[in-house]
Image (cartoon, rainbow, N blue to C red; front, side, top):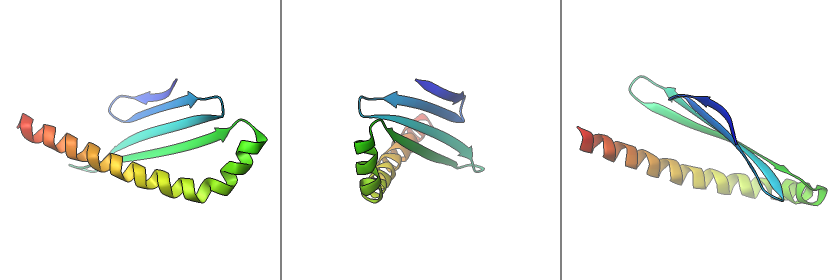
Length: 88
């Protein structure tokens, strides 16, 4: 479900699964010729047992998701710059 939208600036959404809900927000910021992409995410576990597991696993999951986001954003940047070069 979309939760926020500003053309060329922001996209927010929520996803729901049996075990958790996930809220994700992407924001683009113009840096004068460059663009910053920022992602924030929040996981809400639906059961007390999963919340406890989430607390224990939080440092590991934070590191893992940060590494994955860095890889994904690097690939997105590469693809965007390649498309821009082809269009020129």
